[in-house]
Image 1 (spheres, rainbow, N blue to C red):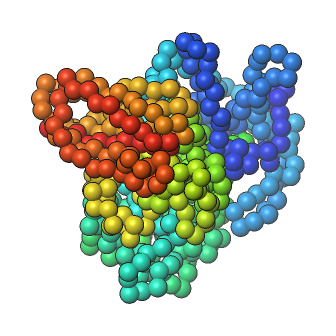
Image 2: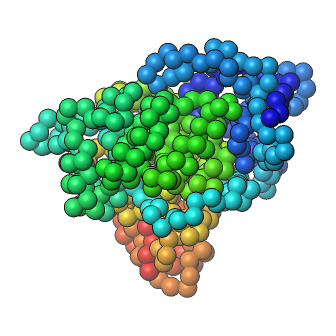
Image 3: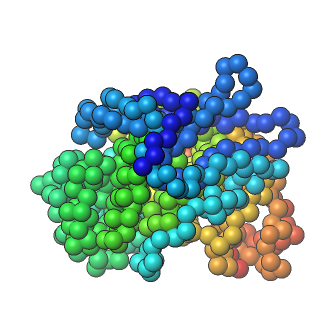
Length: 487
């Protein structure tokens, strides 16, 4: 074994939950190319971080040193309290990660590129027939605020049956049982109010499968037992959370757990995660991961803003699918926004949220709000229920990193489009030259005339569209525009 050292080192404990998710977005000089820096084919080695240099125009690479001692501070957290004077203990003969400088003439090229996937390790999962992408009705963000029902909503079997009914009614493939279904440190038992086998059987009758949230430490402790039990129950996958580090030991954890999940035919969604670095090509049961300031931050901060939303397609999403978790139906302009944990809202307009289902890539895409809120707007629910989570083709029609984006994605004969802006109101021009010589039906969601005051204001229209058409779209501050285009 070889010990690999590096002159740029800092404590693994520095990699906190926010630091692993966020990178600011900076525009290059006017007219110049954009350059994104990342890495891929990362295994048995710590992740690379870049910091500015104090004394010259340069970037310094930094790596977490190898953790020697870890102290448990919570049910979900190990603090690194002692480190070695090297960053990795690894095989002497090996390939080291690719370091990428992705140079793009146009900002949209950063969204269209698949260079990270192409340089990822070759696929190791032989049988992929059981992998099924789709959408998930999510309980945690909306705090299980189900209304108009004859049961007490919360972490209990009746509430989850209600989510299964909602998913079945709308062709949604999965529901998730997030934090609370089990003791956080014991994945082998349910809490008294939740009966997982009963929910699996109920879901099977309706064509809806379950995904279970897990603390990474519990998975580490009960890996084979827990995954065997999940497989026996008929669980579809696991959402694994709170790793919050990317030293060598943690990188190895991702590989080990994903490989073991594949043995038991479990999909994986990592939260509290570092950036994607190629693991999903080797083990495609890893469908998506967080590693981003997502919608959940609106429950306690102002970080998940339209400014953030217009940076991450060009930065974080370049590395791979991201579980941002869109779909908020309570929406607010900047002056009206408040982080409320139990009654969360999003920043920006409702159409801003709808556009995310097209702009943001995630083979497991969440519906973050409650069934009660979606049912009030059948037109929006129909759009979200229909939008695919994997695509045949992607075209970025117009984009400026940090400011605005227009994306068109194709699935079969249908096209979906999404446009988003930051806190600046804009009028953008949409060309439909990507369409074939035919007449299409368009279903359009646009910001309402008063969306600059009331972010939930939107307008739904239907029209005929052909490739020679051009459309002016007006986006409110934090606004959006979404369309489904069918032959």
